[in-house]
Length: 65
Image (tube, rainbow, N blue to C red; front, side, top):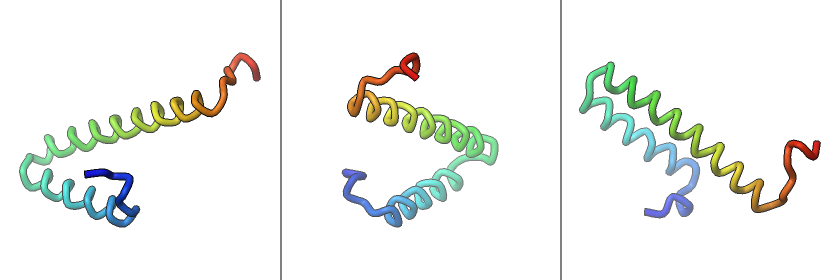
């Protein structure tokens, strides 16, 4: 499955389906821990993607500011 081909609405629907499935299979504590983990994972992926995109577009360093 290529996520680039999905619309925003389709991504939201997919995430909702997965969240509902997970919540039905795990306890409340396990679901909470998984939610926190995926939030951290998403944040880290965003930082990595932003840094990669920034590095590809220019070679500015914070020290140059």
